[in-house]
Image 1 (cartoon, protein in one colour):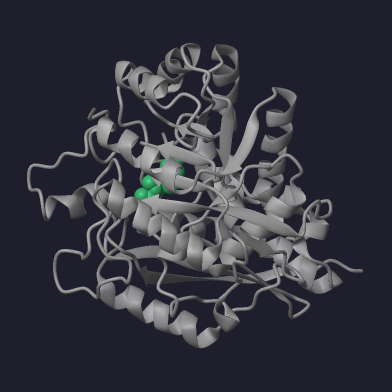
Image 2 (cartoon, rainbow, N blue to C red):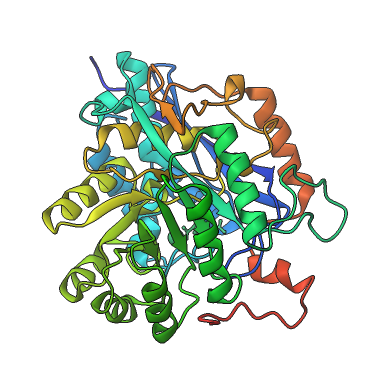
Amino acid sequence: MSGLRITGVTITPVALKDPPLLNASGVHEPYALRSIVEVHTDAGITGINEAYGDDATLALLARAADGLAGVDVFDLNELSRRIAAAVGGVEASSPTELIGAASGDKTVAQAVAAFEVACYDAQGRATGRRVADLLGGAVRERVDFSAYLFYKWAEHPGDYEADPWGEALDPDGIVKQARRMVDRYGFGSLKLKGGVFAPEEEIEAVRALRREFPDRPVRLDPNANWTVPTSHRVAEALAGELEYLEDPTPGIPGMAEVAARTELPLATNMCVTGFEEIPEAVRLGAVQVILSDHHFWGGFRATQALAGICQTFGLGLSMHSNTHLGVSLAAMVHLGAATPNLTYALDTHTPWKWESEDVVAGGGLRFVDGAVTVPAGPGLGVDLDRDAVARLHEQYLTCGFRRRDDVGWMRRVRPDWTGKRPRF
Ligand SMILES: O=C([O-])[C@@H](O)[C@@H](O)[C@H](O)[C@@H](O)C(=O)[O-]
Ligand SMILES: [Mg+2]
């Protein structure tokens, strides 16, 4: 087969409604920003992907896209080389809250990811194969996800449509939310986003979840909002109760101090979010599980490289999620299916999305018993609903939000809020 050469790229920013989910930084704004990436080829085949949609990411992707004309979608090394040449040396600000420090390499990784996944989709469409097959073959046909539980307000401040989930500000509210999520999606494990209330309250919420769902593993993620002594205290209180404790405290040395005094596995999507951070984390034994995320690790191939490193050093591999639409979900499913040691259930924000809002034709992939079946393909196995893209693009144009700012949105309600961490 002759090469499929890139003739152009379209990037369409979109905004989706987002509930007032609380976290260590503050609270989600009423809209989350994503972008739909389309890579067009001289064969008339277009590969699609989804990326962050904040201003800084859009500028980054536009710069990267400029250098891509003529690249064969099968030549991913050339794709990476061109992108590094176009955007290397720039340290973009982090596209989202709570994923750790930015760096020049991470900026390149984020840009490569946006286009690499679209190239895989184009490869799949050209060959009639699923992306999971192109990534080495599916070792599982159903990919498990975890329920992602959040403390939340019933409504955003201001004139915004309320979500159907209601308020969850105490253990009872969290258990009700978990029950509803498990009933609707069948999730077999639970993750509580913590770092919101005093650790004692969050310990109580974890215990309440354990009582209500004794067979389901529970994870707790305070996004580095605890000091080392607080982390020791919580780790001791929840020893044997958690599948893993995610990012209790900031930084690799702090995580290493916590790890030294607990049997609980520590996981991260904050202190290790790029390859350059792995050596120190391994040397100090700071983490036992790394949460991958192809959006910022550099795409599918980089995530599989990360998987190999985790295997080498005996680390577990899980997957992180930010607010996303159905193209990202499909990408996560193919990657989850084709990465043998990605054995933890993946995080997903899907339940927090309004069901009427997706860019994928047919409303997106479905969860059955907490898992998504790898779509049959070709490529990612999902197509864009052009009307929906246009609607969410219009929403982007009118909503007025251009970068994620959980601290700023919290200030609407608490003017003294700083978002400074660790708070407890
Ligand atoms: O969406 C959120 O509020 C999450 O807290 C997100 O920003 C984190 O990056 C993430 O989900 C995490 O696991 O740390
Ligand atoms: Mg996390």
